[in-house]
Image 1 (tube, helix red, strand yellow):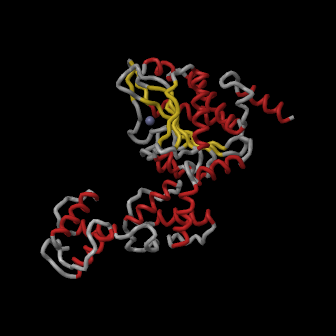
Image 2 (tube, rainbow, N blue to C red):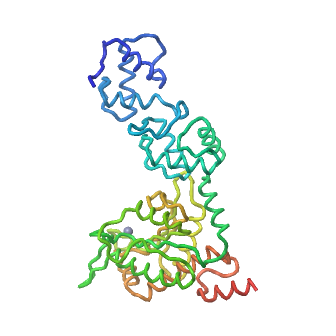
Image 3 (cartoon, rainbow, N blue to C red):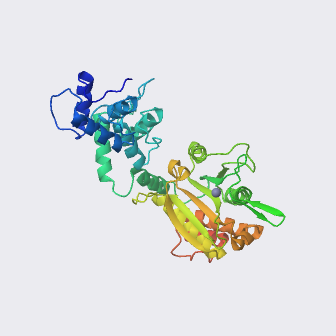
Length: 384
Ligand SMILES: [Zn+2]
């Protein structure tokens, strides 16, 4: 489109002015002239939206102005095909959905199929007709829940409730073990060590395979997200989708860390959470259990538990944690990690953490002081 500029008049200018008035960048008036005040307002708008500040309304500025005229709730949003609805109200909706734990994709301001699916899911869960469009009823429910739920998203409440209802039993539960990296040339951290080359991808796969056997022996259905050497790299979203598709009860992702300082060492565990305190409570509990069991059983340095919004943690619909099982760049950690007996210890620790998730015996049995057989005996004794 031809850029509209200062000095012009007409209905297009009137429309631009009315949007700027709505954004409170311009005083209300009935003028249809692109005057100095209009140009100042356009420049302010361009600056606020990260568009090149030239005071002209070209295609990009017009699209941004068009999108900005909508405040969330001012119009009904729906999945329009083939031309989707675009606007700041859409990105506000997407942000709200994401905050509440729905997977609406990136907050890109485009009401696509994924956003419609997230709205449908929300509607179903609050008992509205699941039509995937966001009208007054759905807006009302969003506002109500957004206010009521402070520091705990409905998803996390649901997650905790689902977890509680699933009962204290490992048998029949589905767990996904995600050995990090490993596709194509994505080997994660690689450290040459004399004639040998250690890779994060191989070491975490070894731990995952050992863990698979132990968890399966305990009665769980175990899935690995990848084989020892898949052809293609696998993004976090794909791994999350796989776990979601399996309806997994838990997901544990295994990685190693790296640092240019060889003195950096230790174990860290991550769960989903944002800086503002929104967190997966069940995921956080699993993270603390895993971290504690590993640190106590192996004597590794604790780099503590942290909340992250990484794709894998954000997009999974079950309690999910990622463990960084030490620094491959630390000679001390590496010596341990390359020892299969040490990796068995880690497997034992993670197994105990999973057991503890389902059998809350932490008050009776001190962490790390027992092996899993004893834990099982303890539980059998308590049941009889
Ligand atoms: Zn990694």
